[in-house]
Amino acid sequence: MSQHPATQRTTEWANALDVAHPADVSDDNVVDLTLVMHDHESVRTAMLQTPNEVGTWSLEYLGPGFHVQLRIARRNRQARLDGWMSPARPVKVLLSTLLHKPTILEAEVSESGRFEFPIAPTGACRMSFATDGPGRHPATPPFWI
Image 1: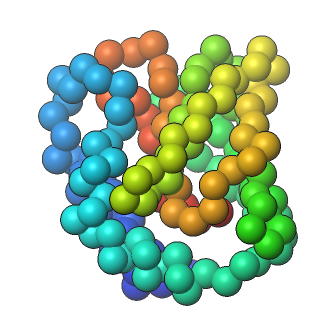
Image 2: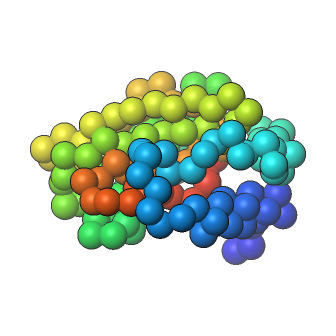
Image 3: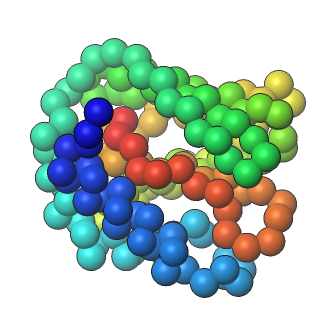
């Protein structure tokens, strides 16, 4: 299945930012979200082409040493994101929008591996995992809620 051209451009842009960041960055940011403006038009185009959808979607990500499953439920403009990390770790999860003025939400992974964002933003987002290791935190590719 091929991606929409705007989605593909945004994914390529986010991947390029990942490579462009030096490995010894010591701050907690996965990516400087102010750089999103360089390709803001692709994000906005993809978002405008996404109707107010209703339904539930599942996404899976394989991080370094962990697996994350996401369940996204959306009804009109309201969205909810539930996640499960395996193996469970005491990690902070950051959900960031890819907008000019980004929203960054935080959740903690429970002992059972569960985390949630009861009121998740809609549109283009990215999730990162604040692990204990040095350097940048693992992050997902952009996805739409």
